[in-house]
Length: 193
Image (spheres, rainbow, N blue to C red):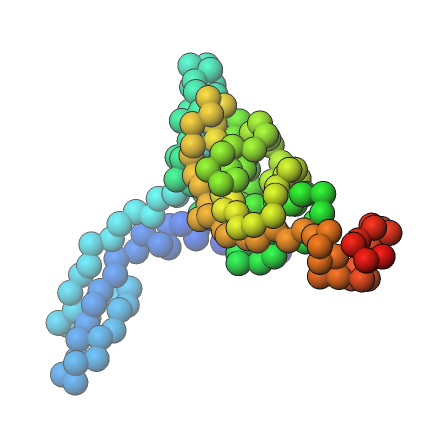
């Protein structure tokens, strides 16, 4: 019995939303909306409520065309492309000349896109699906690093602001300056030893 009453109420609920609505303003300026007509009330047009959800199965042509639409994605959709390693104005200490580079992307790297690291204006390695790369043969001194997001054709879709970092390598003449190194690391023969 209770289930039947609930079902009846659910079925009648949409009909209740179609009732006329009246707007009444009293002498003090108070506005009242009601479904009952009263003297001096203005009848408002009722609009039949509509569902905003529509579902349609894609046609065969739309399904075939879907990959082409993916290829034409909005290229400005990367809200953030930012080098997070090495730190801007930071110092990298590595006698082998290695620098670990990482980029943060928002949103994540999309299908068909790759990251290309550019050191001092020159691309390093091939574009890859990874957001990190170990750069080799980076010599002592000041360097500028940038990351680019490229498509399958190698065209740049988005790029980071460049960061400046400094590569520090221990010198044979001043070995004690390397972080954590003693006065003569590795037993290098120095003049006077």
